[in-house]
Length: 500
Image (tube, rainbow, N blue to C red; front, side, top):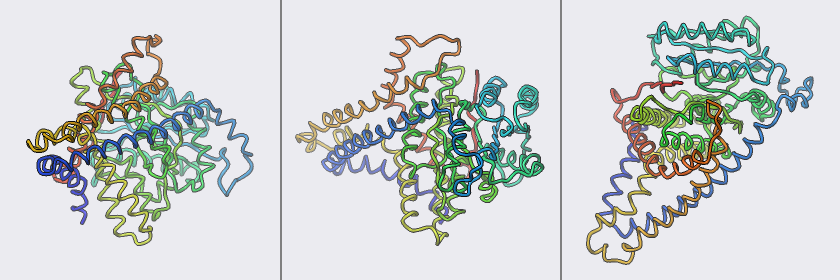
């Protein structure tokens, strides 16, 4: 059954692609009606999601201006609301897994950690190196330890051995090793209560704002189920946004905006990239899995199945900033962006895991199983097919429908109707373009953005139809097809190159 579940995302996507051509030839009139209805649905969905995007954006801006440490102080520190610990009892264990990223990238991340507006005696920092990265990585780790080791309650550099059994080289196996090392070398010797330790795992290019841990502690303290939750920030891929080609900026902002929309729909939210988890929860679910690529999203499903559905993602409505994929040359950047998107699309490997888990768990309510199964399958199916359907079905019936269809009034109006609906949906894209202005950081040289910069950053969104296909549908199709084929076609973990 597991093997069938692995083929299911690709089966649905390829069936859709084949039917696009087959039905455009055999039933062009029905396909023309369908695409008009589908484009209308897409327009309404765009409007619906734009409201969520704006709501998250407004909440995020307000949250970044708030002194969360002051708000924590207002909560009486000697009071234990709902049986939860005082925020002063909380420790934050921060794990940054690293492979071969340059010292400058790692240093920027630790500089942001050192600037946080939170008691440093409650912060434990772990730089998680890979043995396979060799001496350069060890040298970077030693430089970071000497420079920042005194900034925190404890500072630990771990080295994940290569070639351990039942592992693949990647972020998940490194994180699991680092967390266990922190447990043995820091948490247990200090006799820290696992229920009062929040583990934040960040990519090594992730930079936090000063109020991040205050906001995290506040949400944890006020969560209805604090130990049955993952705490999810909003990833902004903006650290190096001014160094990226236009298409890479569109892809990066599109990823950010999707995560922002999801934060306003917590009932559909799963974990992604940077995240924070109670250490007690990590111990109970067995830490991050060491033999998969998409450990950042799998950790949610591990918790969901371990606690029989009593698990959720708490949106922080608060950002962390990360690097956009970029390379020294234009074509290498295209390659890096594509491979990054393909790795994210490889999250479809969670589908057989959760479907198998649902099949074998009699406790989770059936409605919850159907809800999450549909959302997971629909999400990956949309990833691989929606943009192709929108931009292909408007003309496929005209080319394949034959002379009889081409002499109908519907044939004449089909491209005009679909173009009009798509142009209406571009209003939402324009509002996103304007919103992206407020997320742009200053240039590295201190220069302010000028009118020409803003103009370029606005018109770059005209590339969105291309990026949706080239860096959305195609890597989605490839990832799902590889999962279905299995064996040598399965993806290993690919580390997005970072540079300054």
